[in-house]
Length: 126
Figure 1 (cartoon, rainbow, N blue to C red):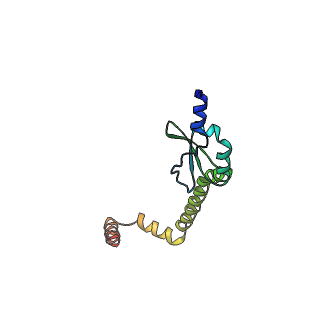
Figure 2 (spheres, one colour):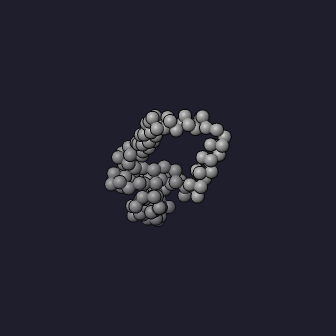
Figure 3 (tube, helix red, strand yellow):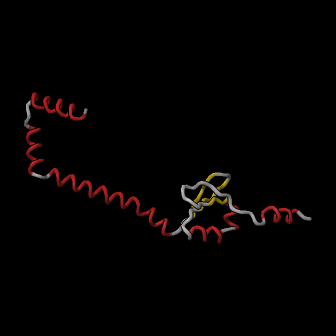
């Protein structure tokens, strides 16, 4: 029996190495297995699994569905929109007549008044 037959017998029917990828049902393939099992990997990704491709036992790439990829790309955008809404709300509160009066009082306060306010604030915090 030749060397090629031994190699085929060793790799025939091999299952991908399962790894912890941060998602339930994720799989990990070596780069060589990924080349040979791309169809299976693609089906796993389309089912929502995250597929990790390793080289020398180190994760090097990830295969995922377009839906997952799009969600990841939009995540920073959604966070930025949330921060923008929070900033706008804070700015609106700062523009109120009450806030303007308090700001004016703080800028025109005497050192003694500022000291009293600082002590009161420190006590309030505990």
